Length: 467
Ligand SMILES: Cc1ncc(COP(=O)(O)O)c(C=O)c1O
Image 1 (cartoon, rainbow, N blue to C red):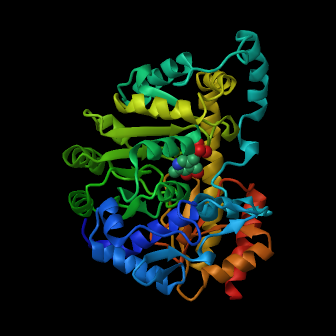
Image 2 (spheres, rainbow, N blue to C red):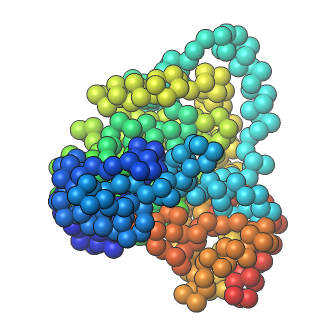
């Protein structure tokens, strides 16, 4: 393992080892006054040079997280571990900043990358619940199968074949409780401490937290409106031998960018050449405005180097928590085992309700109307942004605008003032592997209704002028 070039140089290897040690302390693996592993042992475990571990310990000592006893080694300081009523708060809970922001109620809600519930087919689904009970009177009387309802998997494999040219059998699909669970299960199977993961910069904040909790070493890959720099991706794969590349290449969260079709084929070739699993997270595929997005990377994969996660949370019913994961054996076998340990199967009732809605003609009608409504929302937000000259690239789909504020506006100050006025948005640094991107914010246009959207944007832009 070597010090790297490019973006990760601003987060050198010793700093990643520092974070890794701190994470393990916060998880309770090493408690206050515990002796830490020697420099030699930890260097062996993490497969890094001893000097790197030494630098990390020295920094931890300077920061008061660790103290040194002469000739005896390094020990955990009393105040370096957060303890609340005797319970060590997991690093995940500490770092799940996105959910903290979203939990705050706000009248002008631009932080939730969710669709206004009034635009979702709630009435129709509630009628369906009764029908589902009539069709399957014993649906609640037994466990679901771990891999997911047979009928649903069969129907989805057919759907993928027809719409996305994915050649899949139902055996190659697993139903999970949301896309987040899918990412979590994959991380559990694939990642140990200091395993390298390529991850877009910026990226979906929860994925960052999940990989960090596994102790992974995150290597950022810049995503732009034109996709990735493939030369850089190849260099990083060659240099770090990452276990996986987690990506959201279609109407990406938070930026809305879509990786072009020519890069998709080449990325699959790179994954095969460097034995790096691509985890393709694709919850926004069907939420496009004018043009259908390019085929998933999974469509070009013949060797089993792509796992395809397709959550239906966003535009059908977030509360049902239905997501399909497509991958080849033997990875599927491991995934099923992990799923059985996690919850023994996604609730059958949810799967049946989803199945009958998904295969009904109502779905296409709903999607058609939804796309128009979301495009109107996006345009309202863009009209207001244009008045203050903030920068963004208009996305072809998704739920968010990724906006760059002028350098003289402090996002932190704007965030604080906005909260006082019941306006919420997400500061860009939460999506950044390196915790930078301090001039950026994510504004979701999908949750607030049209009136609140315009009013809230006018208030937000007016606030920025007072800073
Ligand atoms: C890129 C991405 N992946 C996964 C998820 C989680 O989806 P789910 O609600 O199905 O867990 C989200 C939610 O915002 C997301 O943006």
